[in-house]
Image (cartoon, rainbow, N blue to C red):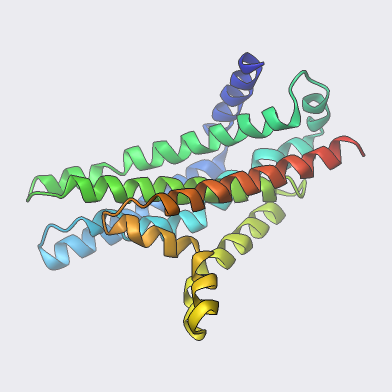
Length: 237
């Protein structure tokens, strides 16, 4: 069974390298991040770790819907979902195979972005412990965003619709941090605890708290579970 999941994973990875949308997403991420990094660094002439990661999470908010919207939507549009559903793979394995490919793309983006701290090391010392914590937070939040995108992709055969739904869901999680400022006490804490951005802040301070890791893992499991349920309903129609 794992061999078939691996075959699906390889197929999805191959699709990422032949899909124009993937190149647009990559280009958007690195052009904007490169611009923000260079202007911040050149403007201050000071080596600071936050130049590397301060804008990355915001950019993931835009590119993860682009990178995930075709995962299931394309299968539904082309009618190849029937082949998947009649294969030896369960819906759970289909979702896992596609999600692992999406997470691999996240790792690729983060790996390439290491060029920015490398540039900074040419001009000063960096706190690598802080950077490692920040990158762990970026990986977790981007992985959670991909899970949301995969779920959105299972809802429609139209990629654009899936992308818009994914962005809307992610934006909702994103602005909860700002919305919580309008409340006080318990209400503020509850709203803030559901915000993706709120849980990232500790990682960016160099603090790795298990509760924040659990939040992102729970979010991933929730939306992967919803994706499985969505596809199960389609399978038995």
